[in-house]
Length: 378
Picture 1 (cartoon, rainbow, N blue to C red):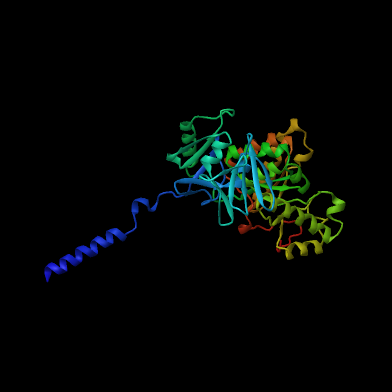
Picture 2 (picture 1 turned 180 degrees about the vertical axis):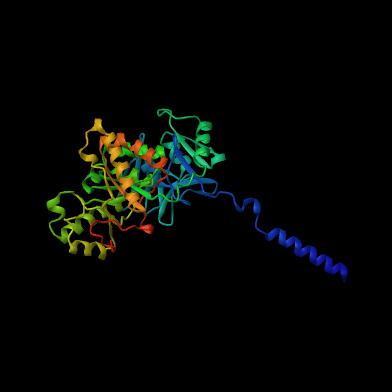
């Protein structure tokens, strides 16, 4: 009897060992990353996956990062980069490379998103693709574009992933907002924000999004929030009546949705909401699920000459400190995509960080009411 009981205990113990969660893997990082030359690309957690031993990425999103030409029809999506064309037929579910069927590295649909093996995509379009296991990253590089060594890149990523020093608890959040893009100055702002690891909020004009779709896409892919600044920015058209006002915003939103998949909920009225935005316009915004932002700090950067860019920095410093002393916990700063602002932005960020302010992008989940009408519904 004792022998039987002992055997039972041993079996139970063995089963516990088998079924108990593997603590050695419980905290292992499951996310994977993709880098292009010397920077990490922005993918949401879980977007980059491992399937059948291959790292796969969203096809269209990665093509945008590579600045590939993208053509979409109802039946097909086609991207072209460095003389190579990759296409996918939605009806037949077949992948083609330069019109030849590709089977081994076929594009696949997962949760309504097309995925492609990153190594295959990179190599057929002329990139070297290496997997840096220590940082769980597939890195794409090109001989025609300068870049640091893999080891230097690993060291940089490890350093960047160290937890940031929290901002002083008594300091407000600052939102850096940029109006009137996208344009070539937007691209410079994106590079600066990347270097300082800061996210902003961009209020684009729809007609300029049509002129510069790749810059708009890159802004979204870099993790910044895209707000609405109307299609035309023409006062007589935007404020003709409530219906015209709403159409200006909704048309731009449809454009951004088609380009990036992003649906915006934040509007900035051209020239500010007072006195132009009427009560009927505000009601239409609310009815359609929109919020509206003006600003706390007007840097008047648009009228400052490029050689006097330090005045923009001073305007930020004075305005932010004034707002803080007035007990404002969320400070919205108005900037524009202009050359003088390009020059001022590094000093603005450095000062804000040195003073302990937290710089954040707009988040719909943590909306802060900020409009000149003091309308809490917006």
